[in-house]
Length: 64
Image 1 (cartoon, one colour):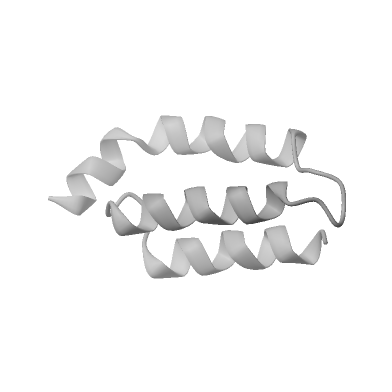
Image 2 (cartoon, rainbow, N blue to C red; image 1 turned 180 degrees about the vertical axis):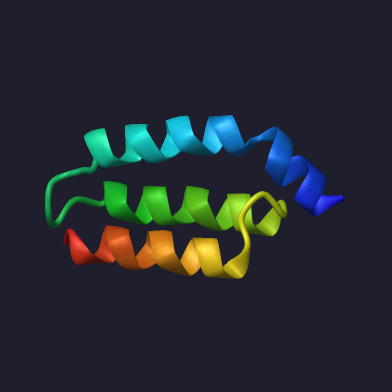
């Protein structure tokens, strides 16, 4: 079931990824915490795999 949901939401993930890159908060901002929390929610819901979450987390933390 999670893989089916992931396939259905893949176009949304692409849009989310583009929006995340365009709207990343400034260094030192608490918005990074909010963004990581949202990613964790997607992982908990089965939309993101642990590997996808880890990759996005590293990408976000690299910008701090």
